[in-house]
Length: 315
Length: 261
Ligand SMILES: [Zn+2]
Image (cartoon, rainbow over all chains, first blue to last red; front, side, top):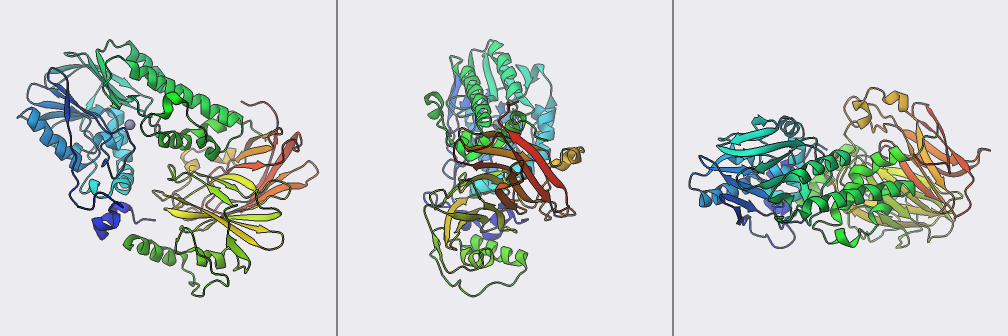
């Protein structure tokens, strides 16, 4: 089928994709609230649910930090409309507006607001930039399908400025840049030198089930080791609340360990994917945001590979 | 409704075949209200007179397909006695028939994966040996494109070496047989790539007795993966997975209760 939802949205107008209840009016708006987490540092906390017409895809955490000439925004949200709301909110915090953007990785909820910030440098790891070019359009089709009119006008704008690891200065603000991987092939975590906040991107989730469409579990755990060793004062996870005690790293690791053990045992027991999805997550994970949907998605992402590894060859 | 009508029209165009304007001889109230069931009842099942929707045919999949190339499905008609075959199909998609399962000595239950092209009702139509039909349904949402994408296999150049590899195992105590056969399962709908699919698979004893068999169509996933279910304690120590594809390649693997990797 070549007729994507993105095109049908243009052809049919918003009414065909309007949600069953609630947003009957075409006026969809994000209500972004900055939470101060340090001197000149704010976080916008996303919903811990999956993408929905109710949340407009605003499920991601965004961090804003004061630089020499304006605010540095880490991750830009799921849509053009979100980027616009973020820009407006930033002006309320600092009259000079946004001076730079960082994308922690190439998932659409973290960089589809870039379009609004085309006039400032948009930083990311090189592999993140490449992945945004490679996968961006397919992500956009899926986001239009999931979020309909919330996505109107959104275009894929990959990052423009490649950064490496080590000391990193963006608009005069000092960071330790950690080029890691595991959630995707390229995950950038930043430690803000002035406040000690660790901006972990999606390497760390908190009270929200981790997502695995691009995951490598071994690499992810190795990255968590690195993050556990940073002497951060607090953690901004990619999704979920601000973590002042460091519990989010341990929770993410425990979840990944449970995932892998569960999928491997399923393969050893000869389970099909639907039977695996029927398993009840343990209590410590069952109450996380986006459960059990994320577990079901993970079965689709990781089970075929794990099964191929475990089942013996018969010819 | 505009979107639905658009898809409907597109399916008709793609199918390129005459639309069956007549009602089936036994017209059913489709619980999925897909608008396509009458057509498939005639076209796929041959317009049987003795047919009904039946809650005993349980069709389960995810609410939404995360990977349109690998959508899991569990069909369980074991509450219906004397099953001859189970026809699994999708209402919307360029090729509606997914597979037909002949349980023979197995339970009327099968786990499979398939490629989905768009949001659609999925059906399992169960025929008993006396010729009556019992239909179960589920609905799966999807981003689509699963049928028209080229196989993943061609991303590596050694795919031919692995063609026909069988991985799997028997679990005699629980009566499970699970196996995965390496094959691109090309639908013929991707540009320039002809149809290349496994057409038949069976679980056979050493003596060549077929304990269960499957007829596959294009929408079965790349590297088809099945669980078949037998009465606990009845499986032999090992069974052959045998079949052939439409290019005449023979598939022959042995699965047993051996150790796992
Ligand atoms: Zn992510």
